[in-house]
Image 1 (cartoon, rainbow, N blue to C red):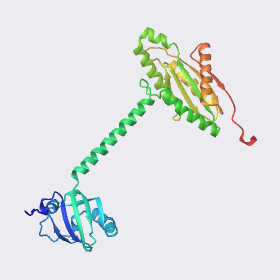
Image 2 (cartoon, rainbow, N blue to C red):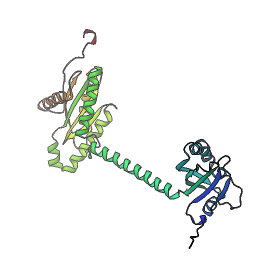
Image 3 (tube, rainbow, N blue to C red):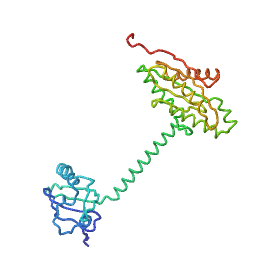
Image 4 (cartoon, helix red, strand yellow):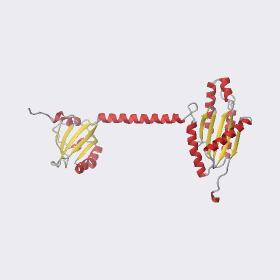
Length: 303
């Protein structure tokens, strides 16, 4: 028994056009339905596409067909009788034995577009979450400053650039005085408030390009580039005074600072020197700074 079938039963648009002017010779019901056109309409396949898709058709798809005899999954946009835009996927081919005809298969790509948009949204969401996680991994949760790991990485980069350009840099180790007493006498909640307030004071007065972090407990660190060590000394002195002058939740809070300035010293040595100077400031009575300029810039003219 001979099988009977109709092109109208295919779940995609099937169209045959001429190669030269793309006049429709025959098309199935699916194609006319998505175009919202009558089967008896005299149509060129060009006429059902948006202006942008027509340009794509003439400048890319048809030349590809002529050269390669086929094309696959080209996305175009149909504009139907109700002036609605409909994304479609187009496959087409020219048979060697019928070079004057183009055979088209056209499928509505609404779900594909929707899925693609969902994937784009998902990717954007994942990228945003990854950025947030990266920020969290570098940030001290309590104060919002950089944490120790992020600080050491960024400080190392800054110091290497300063050495290369001979601009000089300064490293401050900062410690809140008698912080254990604050926690013991007023509770850890008060200690957290003090840490946040001190961090905000530092942030307010630090240069924009300085790198500031809470590196552990009640310890903070700051590194900055400069032309001379005077600017760093002035800043360190100001930080000591500002914290001392501002009552923090009815408490008088003070800080001690060790400040090491250099032109040709790597991060590790500069860190150690600032730490030694911090303990010197502590031993000298706290609420003060101890500073030292370790070396001088290299005179390039004498090299």
